[in-house]
Length: 92
Image (cartoon, rainbow, N blue to C red; front, top):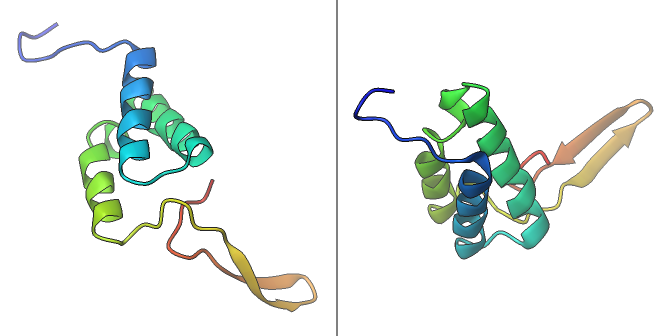
């Protein structure tokens, strides 16, 4: 392993992600799911949506661009077609 890299066990990474998410306003279940996604992406090597993206995501929440506890609502239904408003939330 290169000298400028460190290894963090997945459980510790997940726990840290969840702790930060809860501090910025996530309820427990959305924080757990979101932390798991960031952890899994990091482990799988999808760094663009893992640990490297996490600080930007936190910034989006703090800037009001992501609503951590939004509940999607159906705005319109026409047969098999529906229009949903995600309320600036996550697709969990």
